[in-house]
Length: 66
Image (cartoon, rainbow, N blue to C red; front, side, top):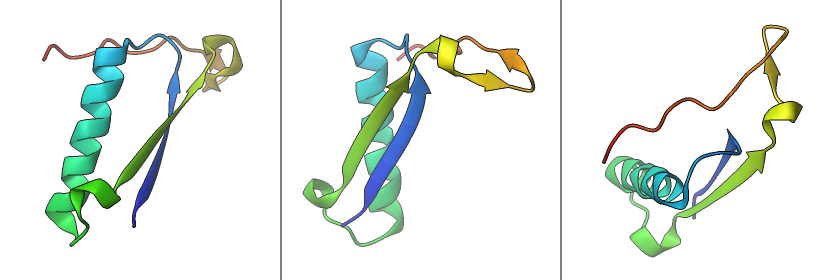
C-alpha cells in the first residue's frame, strides 16, 4: 500500500500536521484503489537551522485556517 513521506520544517502545530496527513490520504484514495487504512503518511520534521533554499535560510510558511 502507498507510503507518503513528507519533510517539513519544524514549527507546524499538531492540528496542521494532522490536516495535511488527512488531505494527503484523501488525495491517494481519490486517485488510486487503495483502502483508507492502507495509506501511510509519515512526516519528518527538520529544524529551520538545517534548511536552506536559494542560499538563504527559510522559516515555515503560515498554515491556512481550517
